[in-house]
Image (cartoon, rainbow, N blue to C red):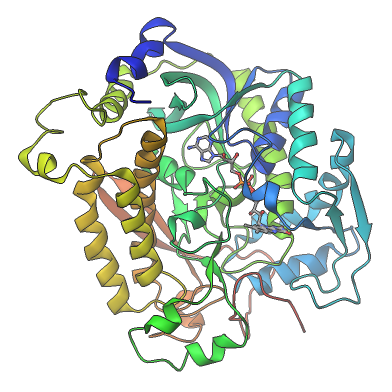
Length: 504
Ligand SMILES: Cc1cc2nc3c(=O)[nH]c(=O)nc-3n(C[C@H](O)[C@H](O)[C@H](O)COP(=O)(O)OP(=O)(O)OC[C@H]3O[C@@H](n4cnc5c(N)ncnc54)[C@H](O)[C@@H]3O)c2cc1C
């Protein structure tokens, strides 16, 4: 089906603006939990999800292990989370996590999630659960997402399936809503919101190899970044890797050879939107939860803790977003931002906008296919910013991403599938540039973050968080001390493949 400009803009012309108290972006663990928490506060909630809410997502395909803790084990869990995270964690977030996880996980039963607990204190075969009891969800992650979707619908959340958010809209350092495309109905529209919760998951599908679900292309990192949010430690990414290979890898020469590059796949983003204990960030009105956030886990995490994070901080984000929505009036949308986004989208269709900035001679020449642009980005990230990195590979990545940038604006689309890929390519490019910038700064190896040219943790210089923000068209980085409240003296921060086991 070949969509023309008029098709994609028809909804904007007729029904224009939608509005809601709380807009949740993402329809899996964190998003559904946030939507429920917000609706329970009695406000109007809309949830937009690129793939149908409760359906395919990382949460849905999860192995189903969740961290469980009690008051008695809270200190032990705190220690394990921080030790595993290589002491880069924001310990204020860890304090919230170990406390809230005690009630928030069993509470899932109220929403129809069928859980059983198993004492695994004697089992160390599964990584990351030593001495922590867990709850395992039946039917893997679908046993969580489907009852959560049912609950959300029952309590009045408006679910917008197949709706992809393309940009966050801002006004005076606050997020006031978003632009979106309905991928089924071929419509572009605007949602104004008093509060917005970002719950779009991670970005492992920005890499050529990954075990993640379709759609995990890091949209939320890019949306937040372009809106002016701070991203923290985005360079800390876990890659699946057979344990036996690890030692061999650190003896390889620089740059890594083909055999090394073919190992493993991208699994989990430790870093992301820099949230505080209330799941808020540096932009008013923007809350975030789940894998799109950073700070809780530092440089690596315990297995099972990602799911618990989505539930704990999903609930907090929804509640705080609703509280804010109750206290303010509906914000005004800046039409120039909407127009710019609509223009960017529509010019990609044949017969679309013919303004010189889009139809420069260079762009005419390029006329790139979204699937090809996306695969160039994925391959660049995998080859040069993947499991193994060096200053040399990072420079190469930067050069390749710079060369891909004009292709992103020269994409041409024939249908909504192409359009989605084109928007994802723009997001993956921004994400890639942020990862490269942060990785270039962090000259050490810690947790899941590995550098062949700096193979050891450097506690003297790198007990630090790297923050990346957008500054006009440029990218700005700053380095801050890691936030330590209770555990201050790291002795031997661990190194290992993603989600590795805790032992002592
Ligand atoms: C194979 C596998 C097994 C795992 N097993 C475990 C485990 O046993 N225990 C554990 O703790 N962790 C596990 N994890 C990690 C865990 O599943 C994820 O970290 C977690 O599910 C992330 O949840 P989320 O809600 O943040 O995001 P996701 O589950 O990734 O959902 C993101 C949602 O956002 C939507 N979305 C994305 N972009 C947009 C956009 N632009 N507009 C609108 N909507 C958008 C998507 O459609 C989706 O609904 C596993 C991961 C994988 C890949």
